[in-house]
Image 1 (spheres, rainbow, N blue to C red):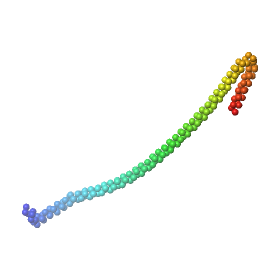
Image 2: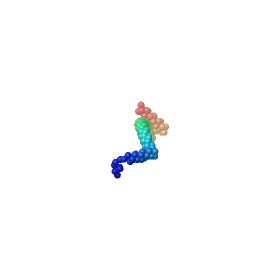
Image 3: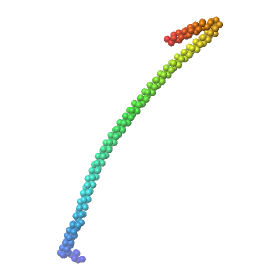
Image 4: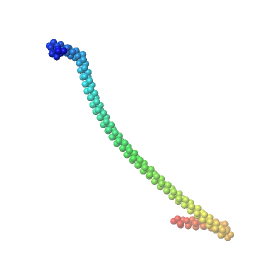
Length: 170
């Protein structure tokens, strides 16, 4: 053990000689593949970093494109919504306008029908008045007047009633 504490020239020589042989053997067999694998790993890491950076930039571009498309889509949706509101308002106006026209038409038809019914009622009333007048006249004059006079009297009464009707209308 003393030889290890006190270095001798032979021991130093053989230690250095074995160390150099070990270094040469390791450099030929282990260090080159080790250094090559380290260099390859550095290149792979560098490539991965570059790929990750490219992917990040690409994803940023895609994100911006998506945001732009979403903005355009929102604008288009709003535009379609406004068009739909306008179309609905126009359709509402058309429906209301048609309803007003139909209501006016119904009122006009009702007024015409009322006028026709009024005319019919007036004719019916005149006919009944004429019939009543004839009956009264027949009863009063039945014994004194013959049939010719009765027909002339009926005509005269009808003429007077129609003249009265015409003067009332004017």
